[in-house]
Length: 145
Image 1 (cartoon, rainbow, N blue to C red):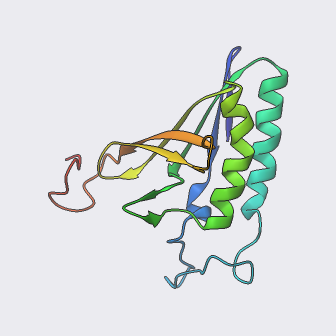
Image 2 (image 1 turned 90 degrees about the vertical axis):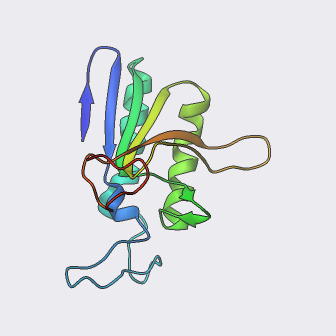
């Protein structure tokens, strides 16, 4: 989904399809390999590339948002590695140029700041992760009632 104003574009990524926890309609986990998943689920990385290019060409800043954040928590990745790497490489030039001004995600039970695509000399992106508005795990730290 893309929402535009004169100076800002908000793009929403279907990050469920990129998640390591994706399950099929029977509830069976779907492995993170190309035998089981496409290289670009729903063509959204290609779509995102076009949306970022269009916004930059029009002089608009971009906020990227989605449900499950890239990166990981406690050493466990949220996205399949190939998707996280492709997303980071795609966003990196737009983050470094200041065209992407924020990356906002949800899903977890507490506020987090994440850096992804960390490499010598920098990183591909930075995002803020906010807790969901429903109590998923009774009494979890930061869970919302």
